[in-house]
Every structure is written in C-alpha cells, then in structure tokens.
Image (cartoon, rainbow, N blue to C red):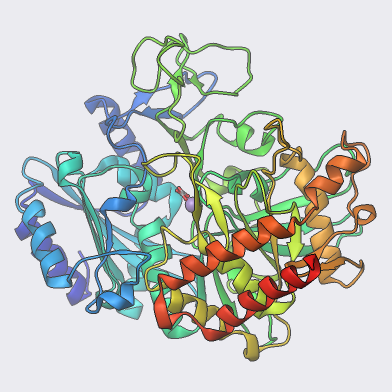
Length: 584
Ligand code: OXD
Ligand code: MN
C-alpha cells in the first residue's frame, strides 16, 4: 500500500498488536467519505438530519462520558520529566508505551483498522507537516477528511519526504477508566486510547498540530500556536493579518469569521484559520502564518445569525454535528440558535425536558470544511501563508483585564502572553468558570516545559525588527451587576481597528505600567450603547487588582523554578514596582 518501508512496517506492527479483521488505507476521496457516512448511518454511529433543510448533515451522539478533552488523562512522555514541565502530566516513555500498548492489544478484533495519511497545511507548503493516523473509528476518518488534507496527496508527500508523525488511535471501550492520550515528542508519535472526542481522537489537531508541533517548532526555530488567523480589510483595500490566541470556547471561531457591523460598511474580514497557526520568520523579517487545518471543529451553542452569520450559514449543509439536540423534524438545535424552533430530543437522544439541563451539550460541535465559510480566504492555501501584523492574546476575565492593551515591544508581549489567565469552559472536562493561568492559551497544548517555551518565544526578539506588535484583549469584562460591559462579536472589529492603527503608528495611547491602552476618544464606539463611564471602566487599570494579578503570575512562574527566563521575571518585577510607585 506504500513504498515507504517505515510506514509499511509500522502499519504491520500495529495490525499485529491490535488484530483488526481488516486494514483499509484511506485515499481521501469524496466517494470514500460517502461510503463511510453510509456505513455509519447503518451502524447508528450517525443519524441523518433533515436533508431538505440540512443537505448532507449528520448527527453523531457521543458516549455521555466522552464529550470533551481530558487534560488529566493527557500525557507528554519525554525521557526527562523536566522537559515536559509542570504544565504537563508526565510518564516515563517506556512505562507509557507498556501501559497503553496493553490496552491496544487485540482492541480492533472484529473492527476495521483505517490508515489515514494526512498533511497539516497546504499540500505544497514547505511549512506543512505530514502524519499518519491509524484508527478503528469511521467517525474519526470522516472528520479527518474535513479537518485535514488527507489521503493520496498526503501519502505521496510522505513517500517523497520520508518523514511523518505516527498517531495510533482506538476508541477502545470508551471507558473513562481505560482512557489515555499520550504524546512522545522525541519519537514524533502519539497514542490515544478510549475516546472518540475530537480533541482526543482527531490526532492531526491538538495532538499533532499543537503538542508535537510545538516541540518540533522549538527545535527548528518556528512557532506552533493555538491561534486563529484573520485578515482585516479596510474600505481602502488595505489588509492586515492578525493571529490571536484564546483559550478553548472563548470565541476564536467567531472572531476568525467576524461580520463587520452595519456601522462598518466597506470593511471585510477574511478567515485564514480559526484554531491553529504555524508561524515562521521569513527573509523579509516578518512572521508568516499558515493554518495547518482545512476545516473547523467549532463549538455550536450560541451560533446564530447575529453572533456569527458566516458560521450559521456554513453549517446548513455538508456538516457533521456532534452532540447537538434535534427538533421534531430532525433539524439540529442548540441553545441560542434563535430560529424560533424547539428541541424535541436532547444531545443524548432523550425527550427534551427543560429541567434536565441544556438540550445541546455545551461543548457540542460542528465539523465543516473551511471552504464552506463565506469569509474563507484563498490565502489559506498560500504556500508561505500570510504576514502577521499583530499577535493578540486573550482570555475570559470578568475583572482586571482591560478591553485591550498593547505591550511595550516583543519581550513585554511575551510576558503578557505568559501571564494570561482565563475562566475555564466546557471544552475540557472539569469545573467551568474557574480562573486559571493559561499562557498564550497553550496550557493544554504546549508539548514541553512552559519555561523553555517562553525562552523560545523570547529568542525571536533579536532575530528581526519587523516582528508583529503584541496585544491583549478581554471581551468578557463585567460590571458590578455581572453584566458584560462590551457587546463583543462583530463590534470587536472596533478593537481590531485600534490594534491595526497602533501597528501602523497612526494613533497615540495612554501609557500605563501594564502597557499602552486606548485613549477613550481613539476607540470608535459611535452608534454603540456605551456611555463614557462604561468606556472608562472597560479601559481602566486598577493598580491594586493588577498588583494582586502580578503576584499570582509570580506564584505561577515559581512552579517552573530556575528555568523561567530571567528577563520575564525582571520585567514582571519592574511592572509591579511601577504600579506601587504610581500608587504612592
Ligand atoms: C478546540 C479546543 O476544540 O480548543 O479547538 O478545545
Ligand atoms: Mn482550540
């Protein structure tokens, strides 16, 4: 099936371990996709949704214990524990292999083993990387077809280059007690057992394109980040590209395909990516980004014609839904869909009853090809990607963080990213709404020690004087009554405009110890229901809150001991002093 001996042997080895009834090499064709959909309709893995209103849309209902990423069962297995860092769960590689291979043994009996060659990034880009996922789940194959460039062309590239990331996956028994997501960055391999959920099972995404790729990126001098990539085109036709990192389920997909509000006629948004950016410094001194993915695996609840019309439209056809509710006539339904319809069945297929919680699971998802997005940018296929003008970090913070701030240069920007925090969401199992440190939105995804990761970020500083400007945003600040102060969604364009103006040196700012903040008059809020007081609150920096915040950052850095770059610790201390002096 392949002339690459290493790949051929590995497939044989895995088949000997897992003992499937048959092995199927996937070619990535549309016919093959159809075949798998039909197979899953037959087995009940998929349900057909209303084909009149939602042609080629299907619903998958997960096992109720398997609906999110499982960070506590996710391991980075490096030879030295220190290399994985306190930010990762660690297991000694030989022990990890022994443990998980024990689970894989014979697990595909009675099943088909699918071999999926895939390419992360445009097939002809020097920045793209290939992998092969072996799985026993046709749902994974169908999702990988949408999310990656998978099949024949990827296999040809693997055979040409001779390298690929190995990913072995089985849904096993879907038993939470027999579930592990293991990464072996030094071996460029992944083993995932016992979950069918996207982030745990579509190995090209979080496992390869973030955890393994971040490790490779450090060795090779580039960046693999949890960032959307968006182009903002002004009425004059000037386009700036922004890469923005937010924790899971904090509106990355919405920002990536933002609809300019009525007040912003002539502005246009181009989506290059909604979740992951691979960034390389090129000869022109600029940082260029590609999106390694070819589709979106987005959070469904909250998507409606107002919050994200692009997404709302693109998921009316050729979409796989996972864990949404359904109406009586088999249309997908979710909270805040706002289409006037009502759910009949909840995400588990039970008759819906509004006492039993949300109808759609809060982490229910759509899987859809990026090409269906009305704001899809053809630059998503560009060999070298797009040049990035601004990097934006963000989080979900009811307090403390202002609407937007700009760092004082690259190194300070690294501190801003490293110190970022956010309230937890339903994208991972565990309690939601708890503030946790989530540096660069990479807490669940950095495949090595965060301290080394920050050093790697800092190392770019002297490589170019054309690096992007770095910002932090917070769309989620609340007033004393717990109401959001900022309308968010399309109106976020107003903040992006200030960011671009700062990059171009077109607008001044208020200089505070934590960074540059907009002067209220420079943030266009015309036509918004925002009074001066609210704007002042949105842009306020409370010195006491910030001293507490920086103290917490110091406590967090301490977990990483001496490996934390001195530069970061010194900058943090200096800001704390400036805040204290300002108060005095
Ligand atoms: C995602 C996540 O699915 O971050 O993108 O959890
Ligand atoms: Mn994500």
